[in-house]
Image 1 (cartoon, rainbow, N blue to C red):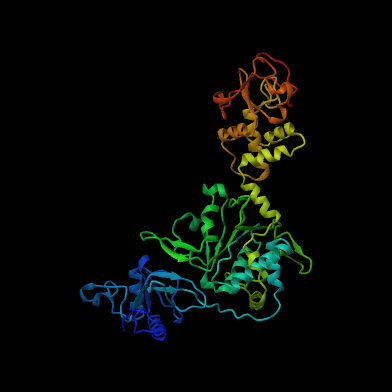
Image 2: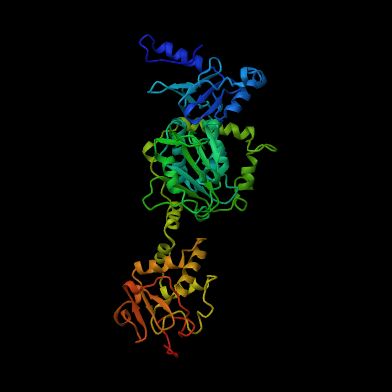
Length: 509
């Protein structure tokens, strides 16, 4: 039969169109024309597998199934797929790809072209029952009851509306063995494993998203610290979280639009895998810092890691025990019947973990200045941080000391050592560049000063009264074009005590 369908024909009606679509959907192949790729029918005959095939792989598929002759028997060696996307009895051409729950294998679009639907119904059957072990897994990740309630609401929304994106994403942080992967596998059972995908840092680093962008649930696992990838993932993931449409990209083919139905779940052992702005409306962050191998569940008599291991079938990778799968089915039943607050789903959960990541997402200099302003003894705090830095000047507590001449201005070397030490204290593994940091001090109201041997910066809390100007005639405040932030001359001939403001005269001061 011909695979061309004309639903707009005045002689065709809805029943004829549906019958034609059903007939075409029985073909062994479909060709996604914009992507120049094929999808093959699943072995059980239920829809099309989501793995993309090249034309050669599609030909091999047809040969293996005995649907076409071997290549050496083709007339003039021409492939049966070469002439047209529509090949009677073998293939139908489609213009888009979808993963639309509870819909036919082929979908008619508004422009009267076809789209292939890769959605596969979940095999898990929800059954009422106890799911206390699933709850324990979720509670550990969500940190507390308030976090668990938000997480359950998010999961119930996605289970009841699998074709809708939640509008928020979840970041799971914590030590290895916390159950982050276990949560994803539970959700995959609820939504259908073939409708979910696990990706890694390498997938997000590449522009090609064809293999994951149309899924219902995307699990981005083992994200790196933000500085190690040389940039932030936050902006790149925004479209995946909130936009109604995504663009499928593959090497050598044009970008192709597709509906965005994905919920995004990310997991990491790192401190700052993404940056979250202060007014962010996309990310919920859960970060349980307790080590699973050290925490003992009083009612179980085992550690949390041992508890998680008991949920998995022995000698089977990523497979749950039959007993736990009974609880997963009970959990699915609870999520199907749970009342959902859709507005709450679209608002991130506010907790200390999210606030902490927002603070870490600030530029390092802003974090440094904020924490410094909160210190009861700011001068001492600068020196304390500086001593924790591998860049600490060796003569910081001996002549010439940490200040410029007789002033209370700290030298450039001491200040940069302080911000490097601050980064070590708070877990920031990527200190700012020295020039960038010193320029930021000027923007924060610090005054650059110098003497004949060194330069430094006078903090705002010392810029009062007589301290607003130099304390000696050979110490000159630098302003305007003369400022050279980030330039640090040697401080070898300046003398001062460890505490600024207690300088003693020395030669050349």
